[in-house]
Image 1 (cartoon, rainbow, N blue to C red):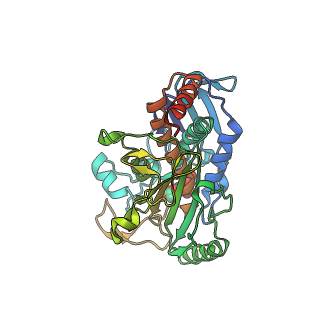
Image 2 (cartoon, protein in one colour):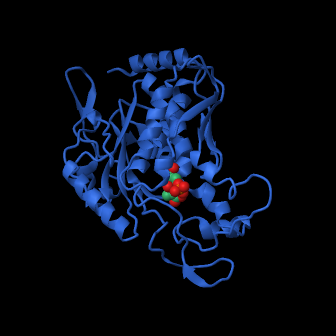
Image 3 (cartoon, rainbow, N blue to C red):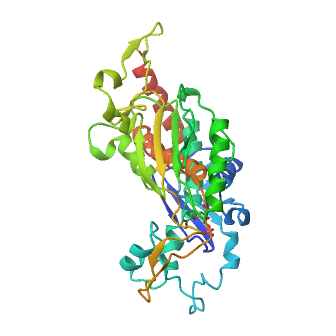
Length: 380
Ligand code: EPS
């Protein structure tokens, strides 16, 4: 199972190519588009989100609402492209002024050096987080596969710009999707987050934050301890870290493991009347030895503040070598809610790969039979 994306932020469209989804999976296009809409609606997003209504066209791999086992091509048209045909023309000669003032924290400077380009636009168009729309499309297909296997993925935002949600006593196994504009379950904190975003916007500044993605009803034993690249935590951390602006990832207690002795942190095991092993805690975040242990998987990620500032930072002009202020592209003040939706998509894609590695990829009938037979074998 693998996927790739293509497309520039202001090009004609974004595409995702998803290969390895088993045949016979029913595809709900409305549900894919619902996920696309979730990514667009966060408080603190910029002007682009009022231009776009991201909708997915399925160009291959699905027939009469069912996958055939073929690669699936998904397309998201950029409505804004019509306003960029001069600057983003595929052929012809440029008539537009180059972007030359690099933004600290963005791919701009390193990108033009590495790829030998003169116009920062050649870099920023692809490094833009607009690309995450294609990931959410691919992830929306993956999560339909996971739902057929009984697995659910939810997320919530727990910190924006230092305003923290109350995260005591969260019932991760039953955490519900939250469709508010910041995806935070603590309404009081969410009001303060909105205030912080408003203030940052007025000051021409940006804010980052932290969110958690939770995988519920995960079967035991997905992933493996036997090789580094088969470890589920490695796959999840890599998937999450690949999202634009993500600077840190934790599983379960993550960095807090450094602060306490082992006796307080390892999740003790108990046996109940139904003769199933259970835990009272989930410090491990649902993964032990690189394998799912049946507890909810908890992946936490930190997003840095978006590097496009309306009160720009000190930088250099790559052409004149003069010290200047960084360029101002239209951007968002805060996109942590959107990142949480993208995080769900990336976790869905990583878990799908691990599930398919374990239970097969030809057809859904085989996958579900394999899953059922496995669950029977490991019972008790
Ligand atoms: C984004 C689209 C972009 C930005 C943002 C994410 O649109 P535009 O550049 O036309 O305003 O709003 O991208 C960035 C924050 C970035 O740094 O590139 C989207 O669809 O999510």
